Image (cartoon, rainbow, N blue to C red; front, top):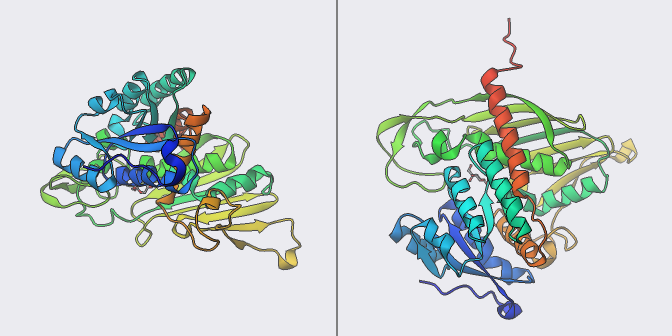
Length: 401
Ligand code: SOE
């Protein structure tokens, strides 16, 4: 098994921040890379140490520990949470275990990073937020993993909006499009079971775009009106363990108990209007998170499939030569980029997890409230619940006569 990681450079003489991670599949691998890389790229006040990783399958978690550079492996998350050599618990499990693990970790005096969505219900998210607020008084921090806030282009968009470049916001148009469920033979993995995932594309993809929209707008949604649909209601059962967005199937079938797609409109407290689409059936769209914001002074547009670019229209320019222009977000004065490559060399999906780790390490060292906090995660959870409630009631769905 690997030794705890010692990031290069002067990081070795800094106080350690010892990480214990629960989960080792797709998100576990992404977070591992973040923790492993962050001290090698950024000049941090603390030295992240990959102390222990946890998963139920002993052989698989030991293999994950070796591959990703964790010093120890556990098969019981309670044992991981109880370890004296863990300061921060990073939760990368399906949503049905977030609340239990986070509450235990906070009670054990640890800082917590929890993958999105924060929980599977508003009640769980409320309990987690209450515990996090109490823990904050004892100097423990809790953050939710909405990693798309940490794309340099979205962070730049936030900065430009806060500077007033869009003026009063009128529209937010956002869609998160994937296509890995198009095949009706794709197996019934945990992401398609309500008891494990809470909801379908809504909680998985919708949670990201709700958070990003509220973060960029700088204000919460006041209300929503929604439609959801499950296109394929019966799927083959998975054969053995599944990981990430793939898996083999067996002969039997089971019922899909979550939404396949969610479509909703919303109104921000300021009166700005928003539209949202989350789907795993957008054939040809792999991981396309598109957001456009229109204000009275200008507009911004971003697509995660071209994540080094931000498009900006300055509406105050003379009409004759105004129009959207592409900002290549790779300059050293763009968010996070002073630590990376020369201009034009670009970053990718995995760097968002490095930036997430960077911001959390700073928050822990400086004792500041990390963002997005559990309270922010709870706000997203409330929007998810409102979307589900609206879709169930079909409240504004007027049948065509
Ligand atoms: C699957 O849809 C998924 O892995 C999400 O769960 C992640 O949050 C997103 O970043 C990529 O897609």
